[in-house]
Length: 279
Ligand code: PAF
Image (cartoon, rainbow, N blue to C red):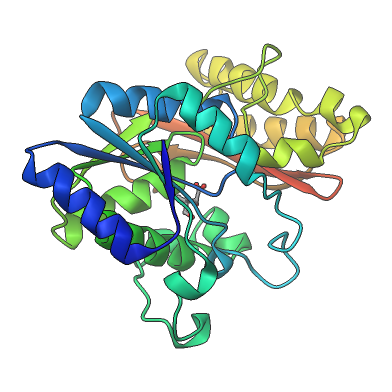
C-alpha cells in the first residue's frame, strides 16, 4: 500500500490508474480505524479495481469546544489495518494542503435545510464542514464510487443530495453499521467511554430496537418518542434528540412514507453517541 500526503502526487497516481481503465473507489475517514471502516474498504474492493482511503481529521466539521484536538490520531496503526484489508492507496494530507487559505477563507459547500436539523441543530455548521471537505476529497481523488457508513445516516443522506444536486459523477454507496457483540455501533468516539459508560452505552441500540417494536405494534409516534427519551434519561444519557423520521427525506413522516428511520443522539458523560435504525 502506498501512503501519500501530497495532492499532486496523488493526482498523478490516480490519473495513471484511470488511463488503464481502472475504476477507483474512495473511502473517506478521519482515521482511528475500526472494523466499521474496514468493512467499507472490503465493500470498495468488490465495487472497484483500486481503493483509495483518506485519513483527515477535518477541523471544519468540529465546533468550538468539540474534540478536534483530542480526536485520536493513530496513523501507523491505521496504515497496518488498511494494508491488511487490501487498500491500495492511503491519502493523508496535512491541514494546509486541504485549507491553503485557512478554514475561515474557505469556499463552502452547503446543502440547505437538512444540514440544520437533527445533528445539525446541535452542531451548527458541522455538515457544511463535512460537505466542503468531502467535495474537496472528491475533487482531489476523482473517484467513480465513494463509500460511507450508515451509522452517520444524516451525513450519508446529505452527501447523496450534494452529489446529485452538484451533478458529481460519483456513485454513493451506504454500508451497514457494524456493531460490537452487545449491539453498540462501532465508532472512533467509543474509545472516550469510561468502563462504566461502556457498560451503559449498548442501551442506546436496545432503546432503538424496543422503540421499533412499539411502532410496529401500533403505539403513537409521540408516545414512542417520549418512552425512548425517558429510557435514555433513566440509563444515564443526556439525549440531544430521539426522532422518528421518513427514511427517504429525513422529514416528519407522512401518510405516504414508505420507510421510517429512528435517529438518536445522546451524551454519555462527555461522549456524544449517535445511532439509528431503519424500519
Ligand atoms: O464520517 C467521517 O468520518 C467524516 O465525517 C468524513 C466523511 C470522513 C468527512 O470528514
